[in-house]
Image (cartoon, rainbow, N blue to C red; front, side, top):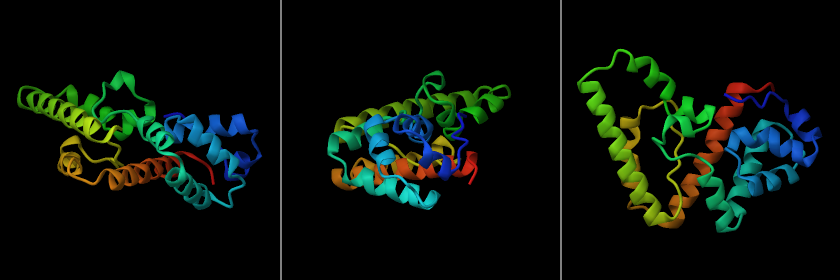
Length: 181
């Protein structure tokens, strides 16, 4: 997983482009959002960084919100197409380890889950115009399928807010997992 590897003080001291580059792995890119976030410095601490991120994400124009959400890969996207952080968060590292022992039923279940994620991703994107983004937090694919299915009937504005919160929650979790304080 790419490491931010910097303290809040170091993030605050970076030039704007350096700040964007340093924080990009937390948010899967999203350059317009990252420029806004870096312009909001200095941050008192990590909580202030992520409180600012949430406030900025919610206040941005809709097209920038969608850019931020869509910076994250689809759930179940091919492992070779996602960032190292998403690879771990979506459980591909566990799947590879378990895959050597998987046969028959386990492989069929994996194919079923992949097909179901493809169906849900497509339906969601058609309905809302952006990707489904959720803080997976180590859950298996099967564990978050019911909430993914339920999201299809959510109010579009509420769903965009939920997805933006998920983006910030993911970034905060990545920060806690990999940076100095």
